[in-house]
Length: 209
Image 1 (cartoon, one colour):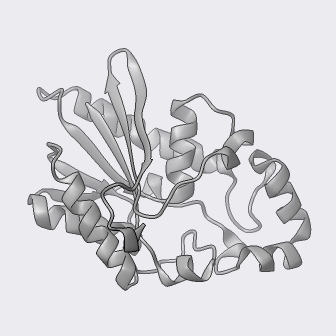
Image 2 (image 1 turned 60 degrees about the horizontal axis):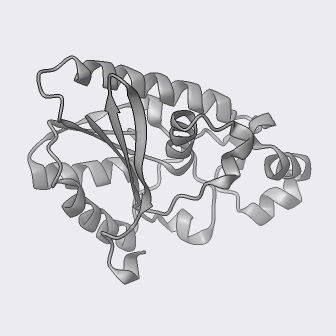
Image 3 (image 1 turned 180 degrees about the horizontal axis):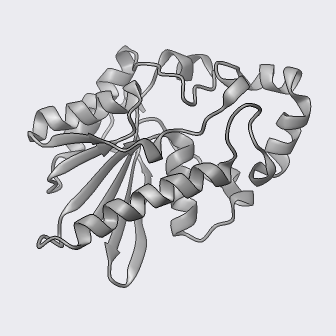
């Protein structure tokens, strides 16, 4: 089985450098264009359903994939983005000025930080991993072992899953970067999971990368 992890495209908050977390922001025009190009790349893999975080920006990508493939979309709340609490809508500079201790800790050791009024990376990783394992188990029991599992999610959520797959500590979270509308792929079988591609944007036109 192949796992295809898709990050959503650009929103206005992405463009402005604002943290959006659970805030339900839609894709902007560039993000919608990215979603179209990403959907065209993803539909080449055999899949029976498209899974996605329930937030609008991920659902818009999933629905575009569904429009091209004719396959259903199912919401997976467990892969929703990190809840940023009081930092929703805040820029990095505003975080540094308004929450200097949190900012310093996040830069030094992100695994040690619980967002004020929100979640920690470990809480995100645990719920996202539980959701992924549940989907894997359901699909590995089918009679189509070559099927592809498509999951549309978010920056921190996808990076936390990849970190778990690669057995990377959350202290190394900042060692990864994940582009908007990127695709990561993982091969899954009874022997385990193996990364086969990371942060691919080759499917995007130059103006959408």
